[in-house]
Length: 188
Image (cartoon, rainbow, N blue to C red; front, top):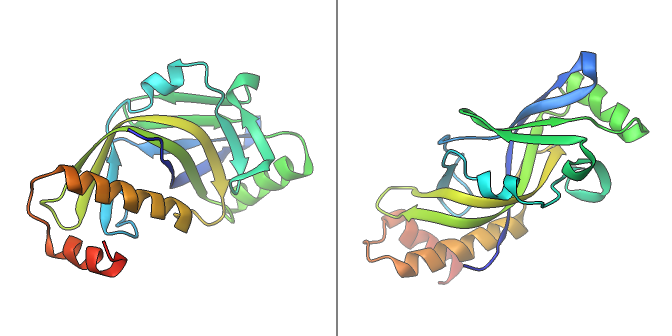
């Protein structure tokens, strides 16, 4: 399976006393909103176990900007763990203008979103439902991002659309009406 960069969103909160951001990057078996190419997505429990046990250095960014690094697992400023709810994170932002402003913005409620970048290593598609459903059972995590607009950038959606078409070609199930409309729109 080829590696395909994807981004998803979630929410966060502050631990004011310890000046940390905490929350869940993703909650297990919790369906997403309908994504741009007419599918919902969810993650199976422990989808990131293999990724977290590797020596990969996951970074925490602001607005997906690699020049705005907030923390990283190799420095111990970003902690990630899977529990019965989902993939939990704890981030200690730097004592910089960006870090301090971020804590204030989250505390005020101006910034509430989290995104994450991943590569789906194992996934299952169900085209018998409308909208189609994607379940990611194994993924490689490479970034989490604090964002004021938790959205799915067009570049990531385009990659997900290609993934969806490729998965559809591998199945024998009958296409849904919604999927047929989508294929007509994208010219597939």
